[in-house]
Image (cartoon, rainbow, N blue to C red; front, side):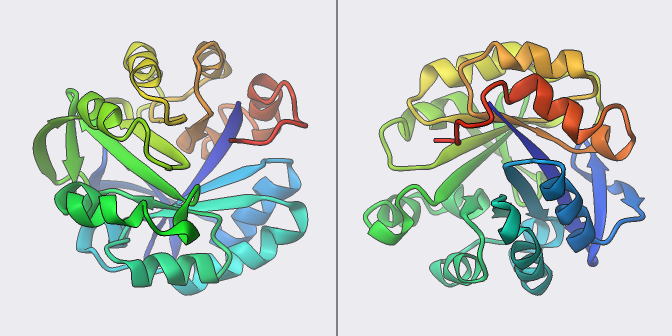
Length: 250
């Protein structure tokens, strides 16, 4: 398993939202590039980046800074995945072009399913696309979590089970940014329902929470606020999850 430290971008700054609420933002005194470099130097294999303005408006806003982040961490072998504002192939290609290793699709994929399914036939994208499933009471939310769909995350995970996706990032919105613990049982159900690797997101506040996730058949866990508020260090998180540092993510 892998630790995915998170950097959420808004107005060029590193921020965190509580339960996805844009009016409940905490801004951290950190330059995104320096923060990415800190995680890379500490030994993190992956970095999870979200363009929050992009997620809300549908237009990626932080391509330039994302490119600088990729350049900074490249010597350390860190891989970056990015989501938020990815609505067409042009944006996917731009992100891959600046060094992003995998691109997370959420709203565009879920609201234009035929387009999303068509991407699976492009050999350039095989193993480079991630589906973001953000759920509130089991049902998927899109457009920066401000719009609710009728479909459940579990149903969609089953639907893409045999697609050539790199992973599914599953977020339980109710616990995101709360540090009260991840939804372990729902994450387990997701992992058992699909062949696509699952990355858990939301709720991690202690090393014990990471230990609970470590027992699940998942690819990794995203950690954000707990790192910024020094509940534990990235090095401690890596020690808990990445028992075999030589093993790379699928």
